[in-house]
Amino acid sequence: MVWGLKKSSAPSPIVEPKKPEQSPDEIISEMLNAYQQHFYEQQKARLDPSAEEAKNLIKRAERLIQDSRIGYSICELVDHTKRWPSWSRRDDFQKYVGFPALDISATVSKTDGRDPHDKVTVHFIYSGRQYATTFVDEGIPSWDEDYNRYGRVEFFAGSDRMLGVEIIADTKRGFEYERWTFWTVFAFAPGQWMKDLVEIAAHIDAHRTSSRNQLFDDIAIEKAKNIRL
Image 1 (tube, rainbow, N blue to C red):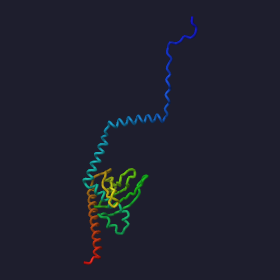
Image 2 (image 1 turned 90 degrees about the vertical axis):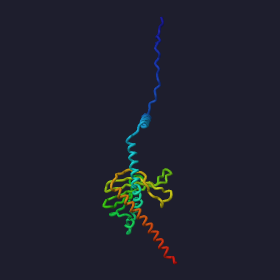
Image 3 (image 1 turned 30 degrees about the horizontal axis):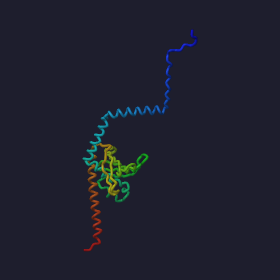
Image 4 (image 1 turned 180 degrees about the vertical axis):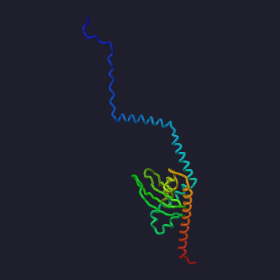
């Protein structure tokens, strides 16, 4: 007879090493990475029709603004009126208006935000209708080699915003050669104001040509005073 404890035939259980517990930051990071990968894979396979429709609508508006000379006209109005707040204090201000406008007012204020810019606001009446523009010169970007100046313009008929555009000016040739041109649109509602705006731009063009010719005539007259033939 054998005395003592009998050996068990069953194998000893394998004790797996405990996994180190994750910190809350590690858990959140892992969840975010998984969500980001899931979101990325979904977006790759998805075409957002609303975004495509929005892009097409913007292109249509841009084409209409270009073809109807609205883009050119709003830039002419901005170039012509941006100095009105300082000129309006002159006794001979009316000769600088350049188109048959009534009840004119022009002010400068600051935009909101961390990087405020001057905001020129002009009110006037043309053909019996009340209009207003706001213009913000946002300057030249400082974060890359972009030599363009950027701005935002809004055009109002009464209290309703009818047009909102972003405009651009090439600064490479110097400040005296800068001319604003239409870039893109962020608000547009067709109406009677379109005809009025194009007419205003035509008045401004004619006024500029007349003023330039008058300047050349004055120079010629002044020179001729000292010539004896």
